[in-house]
Amino acid sequence: MAEVRAQLIGGQNVRINGPPQRGEVPVSYWNSSIHEYQHVRVPSSHIVSVYTTPVPPSTPPRYKKGGKIPKSGLYKLHKGEVVVPAHRVNTVDKALKKDGKKPLKKVCKNCVLPKKQ
Image (cartoon, rainbow, N blue to C red; front, side, top):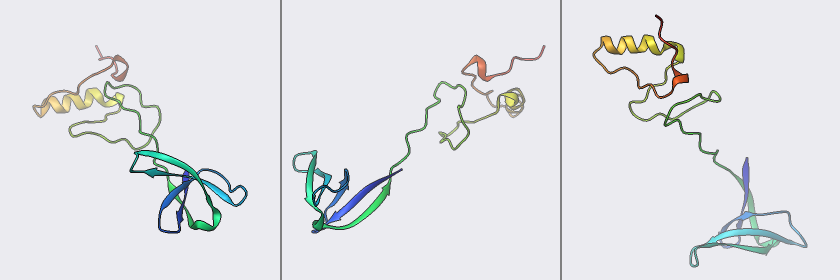
């Protein structure tokens, strides 16, 4: 999704809020002197150029307490975090224990397969 923006005569960049009506374009811009957005109409003759800017995607869900990942994709991990498929948790725990490291932190019952008896 992209945001439609324009540059006015004088170099000010504004966001276009809708289609032109009667030769005027509804726009909004940040007014730093009063710290709020201003919504105005400017004559279309004052627009020098029109361009689009990408809108950043929404923040991905956080998995602080663990849980099921709803879809595949890129996830940002913090230092020291490990992602392991549920069917490999026991194998990884054994390898970590062999290297003298702590086993993986198990945060939910559904994330780990039951141990074989």
